[in-house]
Length: 55
Image (cartoon, rainbow, N blue to C red; front, side):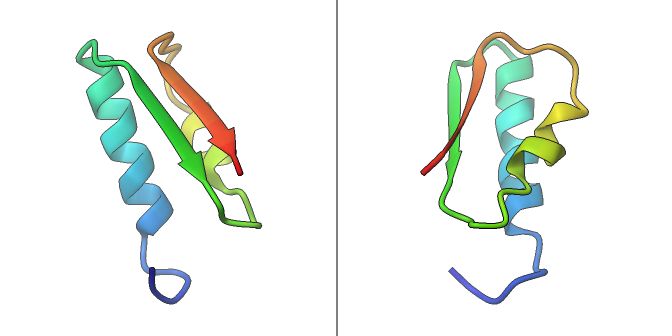
């Protein structure tokens, strides 16, 4: 998907949180071995409609 450091995880997390905050059910997953997704989304309010996974 492109070189590191261009904001792919940040954009994906922001979109997922935004959709979940509006009531949509969202499942966000990553194949990134660094797995920064957890740290990015952990700082958001409790969103029961947002689930995370690492593959």
